[in-house]
Figure 1 (cartoon, rainbow, N blue to C red):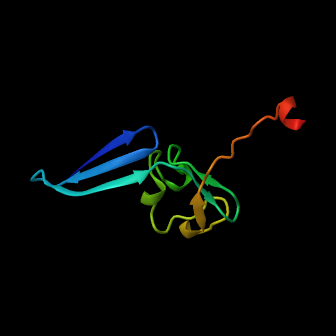
Figure 2 (cartoon, rainbow, N blue to C red):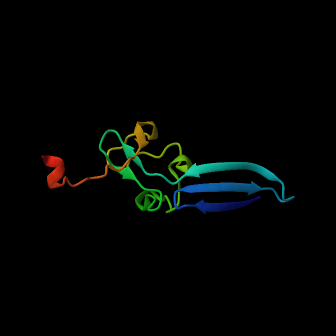
Figure 3 (cartoon, rainbow, N blue to C red):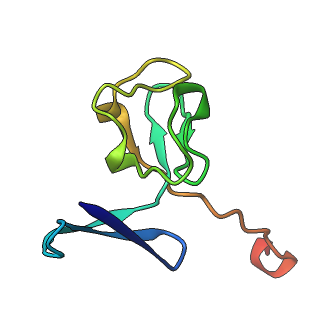
Length: 97
């Protein structure tokens, strides 16, 4: 069985798994988005992984082991939600008037 992973626009992976007879077993799309712990606000970034817990860079949140927990507070995966960066806008003098 072989795995083929394609990175699309830096955030989405498409994983193709083929058997030794070159037949596709499944096609799975996973996101490379960051996830934030709702207990301690730790952000899991798949591009960095979790090297202290033997999670390689490039491991999507969906592909983390079921027993993986927040390295900061020990929260389970179900305590994480997609992380959305808040954009900071500087107010101009015109907006403040």
